[in-house]
Length: 76
Image (cartoon, rainbow, N blue to C red; front, side, top):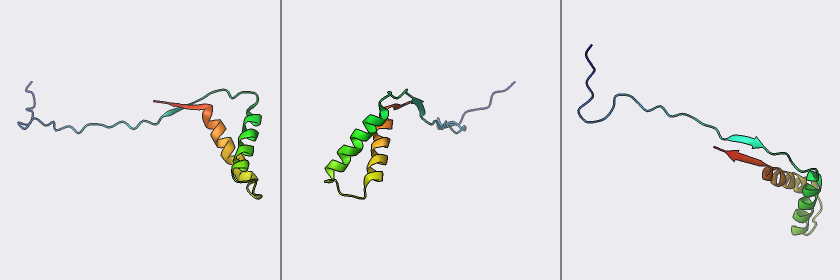
């Protein structure tokens, strides 16, 4: 059986296949005092803005995201 000849310029006729990979997120068990950590961080965020009223929910959500991100790690 005859083999197909490779191009003389050294390049391959096949295009490389790129695999799309998404990072796996491995959950880590949060500590039992998770709410206390979130509450403290939300308080510190409110303190940074001088306890300006009307931002309580925003402070809580930001604090929650920050704290939960500590307990979630990404691996390749």
